[in-house]
Image (cartoon, rainbow, N blue to C red; front, side, top):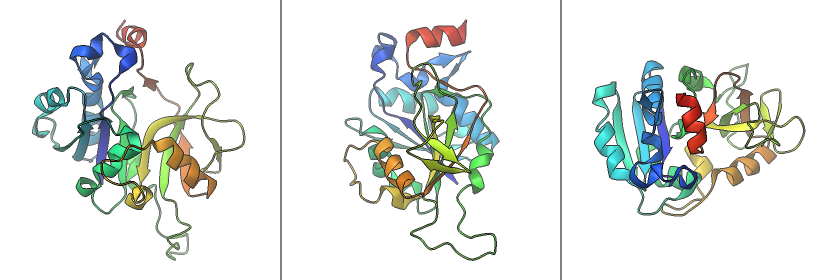
Length: 231
């Protein structure tokens, strides 16, 4: 399985730090946010990694190189202007291949997440070994967390591993998921598009699976949050 780390965001709320440093390179507990991900991916056996970037993207390439220092192989998908989450993924599909891939945000901190859990979440066959028809099999699988302070209402409900846009309680989308490439087929390379709309669309069709992640998880969105993590 390949992984994509989304690292093209400007990080406006993290200014002035992000005026001179891309947000994924900001350090938490002595290590850049994005390096936590790379090392945990490699530990799980996921060594083929794609990283998109826009704002100060050259600094990301200079810091991470080809990934060999981490035991990984990194390819880059540069964007002249940030294409948002789904747009960034669609723009990099030629690097991700035809199999399901893992995608996660470069600005979250989840040091204990076991990415090996992502390796077999999207099933192609039912319990009898019969292939699922393409129009009903899960097209994505996402992880949800208890609602943080900045998203108290949550995003999605969960019913026996099936994600729903309606219902309660609702949980926070952790910005970690496994997706089939066809989920992004309607987005042209270079087109801006958010992932949330796609997730709600396919959740409405019952085609997004998911589970709850209860361990440490922080969407590092403000300077105060960064300082608290480093305190």
